[in-house]
Length: 200
Image 1 (tube, helix red, strand yellow):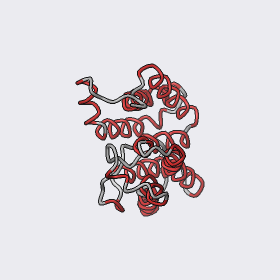
Image 2 (image 1 turned 90 degrees about the horizontal axis):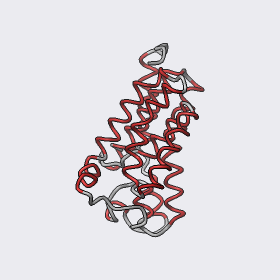
Image 3 (image 1 turned 120 degrees about the horizontal axis):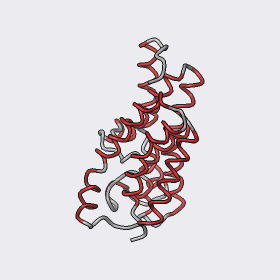
Image 4 (image 1 turned 30 degrees about the vertical axis):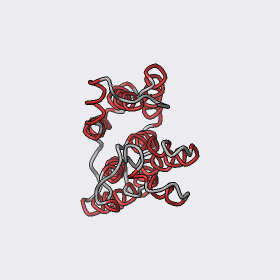
């Protein structure tokens, strides 16, 4: 845990603002703006970049990936710049929760992988790059996006400890548990051997 030095009212304000930022459903906004339909009725119904890719528009998927990651990164960097490190970690968590349960979509959000990675990159770029490397390696070998995300998330605490960022470990564990909770259906399909592969 980081040193707690920010007054509670300011921490509460940081959490609310970061949550609202994280709640912006960029996948839904982009697909509607491009006339691709309601993303929640396409493919898995998820609001993330993987499901946007199912519309066939790679640029829309890339934009969604970047913007969803940016939500976490911007929340962290602004809180660190304007407040302190404890507020930065709280902002990352709040933005992540906002993506999972966005107020704008009646609390039905995405699975949080891009926002998770953006948050980690902003908190400690070596940790974020380590997690990205694990995701890329698993995705390359097994061609299953959800498996790559789950293993990459599970590796995050290891990277934190390895790079001397032990003060992030509690946050990393919480984010990882939320990633696994949101991937519950994927875990069932992985066990059953029915999880679709990338490009299928």
